[in-house]
Amino acid sequence: MADKLQIAIYWGAACGGCDVSVLDTNEFILDVDAAADIRLWPIAADGKYKDVEAMKDDELDLACFNGAVRNSENEYIAKLLRQKSKVLVAYGSCAYMGGIPGLANLTSREKILDTAYVHNASIETGNKVVPQPETKVDCGTVEIPSFYRRVYRLDHVVDVDYYLPGCPPQPDQVKAVLLAVVKGELPPKGSVVGASEHAVCEDCPRSRNEKKVSRFYRPWEIMADPEVCLLEQGVLCAGVATRSGCGARCPSSGIPCRGCYGPLPGVVDQGAKLASAVSSIVDSKDPEEIEQILDGLPDFTSFAYRYSAASSLLQRSHRP
Ligand code: SF4
Ligand code: SF4
Picture (cartoon, rainbow, N blue to C red):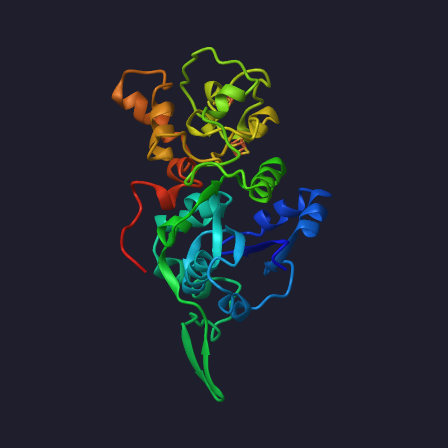
């Protein structure tokens, strides 16, 4: 067993896309299968937590944790995999920054539970039950994980060796990380792997002309010129505040960048960086007019912090 690489793949608060991205490596996954024993991969194979608990410390060569930390089970497995793994990778934008689940930090646990289980038109009256960590039933007590007050990044709860951004990471990045582990050619601890040091705009084929805007549009409200920067046409695009590595996939296909590769090196708050960039292109010096133009930005906070709300300076500090 020791000749083969020992790997675990786990999902916390995630959509499953990161797990699918491992399979997106196509036939390369067969090489992984030949070179590695996958000891835990809940979405794809049977594997018990007790088997991981029984492993020696550092028995796993690599653990890829995708998804954010949203509940007590996610935190428990994060700590368990940290203890049992030589290398722990925050795989994908949710583990790296909190991702889409992190948007829940803009509201409260109570409001989320109320929306899902009480004021929800699809739940019959008389059946509106808010799940509790412990419920007494005839034959004993049923336990489910505790739903935390806020969403955490993986490195809020454990030490992380590498960060692999992307929603989901691109297959070439996934291959590169797996090959680096196989060859023992790992970059310095703490590196953001498979990503560039520059902004998506630098890889974007659209032309930029330093044009200012007097109105913002939703993408479906305008026939955008396919050759020209979306932001300069009034369509919110996060490329200016986002680290590249994806090859500017979205703006190259006519879709604004949503910021999934996270902030540029040295930037603490990706949303604040985007707010600053957007403010600088507003075509007015009159405060009232500026306010009117900015009022045209639909739910800017959710756009600017789509992947990084749990990492932002706005985040809540209390736990759990
Ligand atoms: S803002 Fe968006 S569309 Fe404009 S250059 Fe940057 S990535 Fe391309
Ligand atoms: S263009 Fe932006 S949203 Fe699209 S894959 Fe690249 S970083 Fe992610």
